[in-house]
Length: 269
Image 1 (cartoon, rainbow, N blue to C red):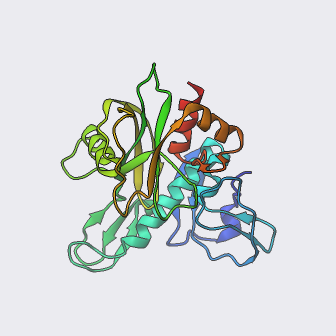
Image 2: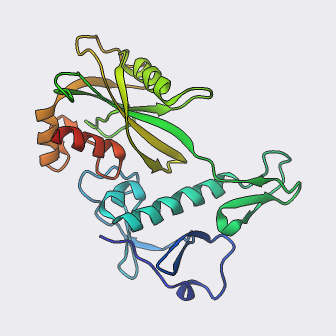
Image 3: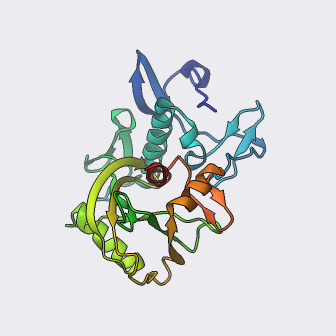
């Protein structure tokens, strides 16, 4: 599966006002433009997809999917283009008016900024930091069990690692401690950084950590936020991954998300 690209001249003779520049590579400039494409039928989403939209098929046979569904199937360049496009267009859709005076804003800097038509105030795309933490039981080097939880709105049997937004004045490590304690009532230790991933839903960057906790501590899922939490063995995670990401009672996040990558890395350890 690959990202379908179209020559600019096949889209419009001049650059549309709502087109945004995604970047350049090897002398080629990549732009993105929101469009309404007529769909003639549904497209089958990838296995274990967490896409919120089942996908569609256009009149010319192209398949249309959302980023959550297919991001993990694209190469680095295509995934980066798709992610940037989603992030920029989402920001513009929600930042159409000036936060200072309320007048309408127009796009500038090839879509990477906006300017108020009233007071001239400049605005730039915002990114909300969020932490995501793989909590294990501390047995051995990387633990033998991982703590997984599910939200009530998720598909049945879907579990993932814990995550939450960083609050004002809070360090990343303090956010990890607070979020895990709030969501499942467990204190964590040995917090270490793993990596990060842009997550434009709507405008986040996921900052990944690992930590360990006492498996004997009773789990207390946050009412209304966490439907269930449980410790899962490495053998169970490996079995789910070997079966395409899901076995009865356990569906793991896919490769599109850093959560899926964290669990796959932990399972291989």
